[in-house]
Each structure stands twice: as C-alpha cells, then as structure tokens.
Image 1 (cartoon, rainbow, N blue to C red):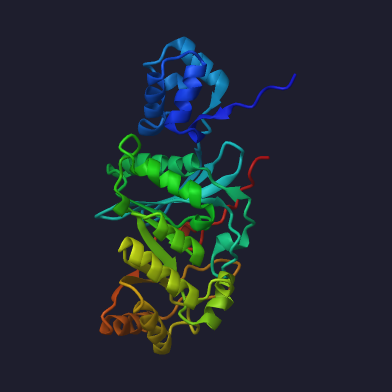
Image 2 (tube, rainbow, N blue to C red):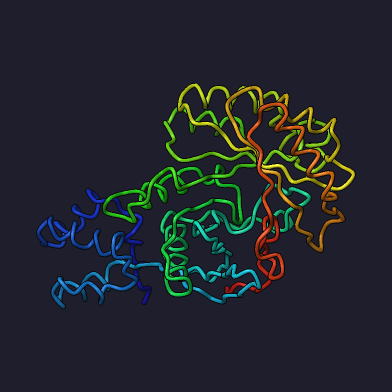
Length: 351
C-alpha cells in the first residue's frame, strides 16, 4: 500500500489554506488560527495548536506536514559566535551562524544546500549545489538562531544577513517569501531595514529586485573592481561583468533609492594595492554606497592569504579620502570555521 505524501502546510498561503480547510468542512477562520501558529508562534507540530480541537489536530497531522528544521549541532567560538549545522526534513544539512555583538545580534542564514558559483575563496563554492531551500527552511533558521540569542545572551535577534551557504538571488522566490514572512505582522514582525541580502552579482536579478521594489538592504560581494581579477576569483563575473553590474545597480537604485554595500575581501598580493583601491573608488561613483573591507578567512581548498594590516589601513584611508563610507570588518568565529567564506558542511547528510 502506497501512503499518500502529505502536503507541506507552510508552502500554502492563507487563501490556499482556507480553501483546504473549507474542503475539510472546517470554518475558514480556522486557517487564520493555524497560520498564526505556523508563522507567528513558529509551531513545529500540530499538537502545539492548543486552541484547535483534538480531532482537527489529528486530521491536520494526517493531511499535512510541518517540515521543521532542527539544530543538528552547535559550536561555540572563543568570541561567543555560535555556528549551527541545521538538519532539514529530507536529511540535508546547511549551516547558519549567530554573531553576537554589544549593540546587535545577527543571524547569518543559508539559502541553498551548497552553491553553484565556485568562488575560489569560499568554502561553500567547493560544494555541489544540491537544491534551493524553501522559504520555511530559511525562516526556521532565523527562529532557531533567535532562540539561541535569547537563551545564551538574553537578547533577541536584531539583524539578519543572507550570507550563509548559497547564492540568494538564484533562489529568488523563496528568499523573498522568507523575508515576507519574517517581516509580516503575523510572522516575526522584523523590519526590512534589519535584513541584508548578499549576492555574488547576477545583473538581471539585481534589476528584478528593483522592479519588485525590494525594501531590504542589498550587498554585493565585489572583491575586485577589475574584470580580469574578478574573473579569476569569481567565475560568475564572466557572464556578469562589472559594466553589467554597474548598469544593474544604477537601475536598482533608481527604482528603490536604496544604497548598496560593497563587500571586499582584501587578499595579500592580489587586490590590496592603492591601484586596486582606485579601481574600487571609481566603481563606487555609480550609486550611493558604502564599503566593507573584510579579512580573508583561510580555507583548506585555497591558497589565498589575508593582506597585511597596514595595507588594509592604507586601502581604507584612500577610500575615505575619496569620500566613500568605509568600514574594516573583523572576522568572527574564525576558530570554528564560522567566519565569512568558511561555511561548508563537513557532515554527511542522511539519504
């Protein structure tokens, strides 16, 4: 006997859920109650839905599935960063990080299992992309990391960055749906301005963000403002040149009026000269922006090293002399491979 596959209840929007409930001869208002349990209260089982009858909970359990993400393992850094491996309902594993600072609690979440972009400095780029995450799987990472922040540091999350495993703009619909649920009053009710989506640079999808009126922050992983150098470390640049990205960013800014953050890892003897800073300053003139200069975090797959401190300081000072808002971002969680570019699942997922 073949058992019918249960419907993923969180894949349904409210009108669809109402239709299902009416078909089950239940009043439509029950859908709102269930929706509240799923998204506002982050229920992971129907048994938790205490304002529903036992009979209805039983029927829901027989008909639907809540494919909740679970914390598989957590590692604690000396700097108090927490790296998590999350187990998905199908056995796949992704990673997410809680970054605690004095003035904020940031969740770094994944959008794909693996990645297809093969950036040479990023551990995830050496993994195969298995699949996109569903919106609820991204949402669950935020919920679980928020619980960690409260339990370990007595503070809720203040910020979310889509800078974990995967390229968010290659999972566009699910990323935007997850943000809709995170910001919705009947979801986590967080501000769009507390959310940053980082992309390696897919020009047509950056334009789509503009067309869709994205309210969250956008960051571009730039790392070189010269096509030859960027091609060398980020093969995605071959189909999304700096010229194409500049045009897309200008279009995005014209539509949204949102400035963009450029992320720039400063590699030793590769992109750390003042001439590189001059190239970056020129690129920064296209739209209002700020620059985060990032320490390189070593991975076993690559031979890059971090630029010397005085080189990074000189690079930063040049950008500032050109009127560019520039920050040097220090790595967090490096000792547990939780820092930028170090996320790569080392555990085998269950089949």
